[in-house]
Every structure is written in C-alpha cells, then in structure tokens.
Image (cartoon, rainbow, N blue to C red):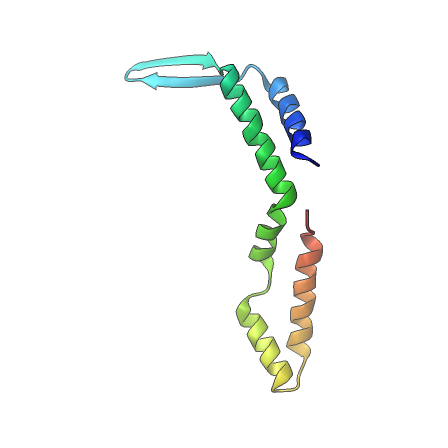
Length: 106
C-alpha cells in the first residue's frame, strides 16, 4: 500500500474515534478539551507513518530479534568445516529459514 492509503485508513480510524479529548494541567488548573484540527491532522499523519513502518520495515526488527545467535552460527559452521559433522549446521539453517518464513518482507 502507498502512504496515501495509510493516511486514508488512519483518517477513518481517527474520525470514528472522535471526539478525542486532551487534558492539560497548568499548576492546579486542569482543563479538558477536544483536540484541535492541527492535532487531529498530526495524529492521522503519525498513525499513517506507523502503519507504513509496520508494513515496510517491521519484518527487519522481527528477524533481527529471532535469528539464531552468532554463537550458534560459529559453533555450527566450525563443527561442519573442521569436525565434518553437519548436524548443528543443518539445525542452524532450519532455524534461519524459519525466521525468514515467519517474518516475510513487507
């Protein structure tokens, strides 16, 4: 989806949630008022940007958190190359590919 689509989606969500109130405190005075048009616009833009990020970039963060560790890689690679035992390497490759399957590119 293009950013314009996310703006339209965010606009619908914000419109359905209206009125959205804000609370402001000034010393002991507390006031409650509805967001201004500029604040609604900012909320829509922020929500659209977040939706765009999730669609295009979040998979990178998810992959980084769930890939097998560098320690697992080094141990598996070393045993495969030096010890001629590919058991850990095969398990590493399976985990690695599962992360890619579970977290496809946006």
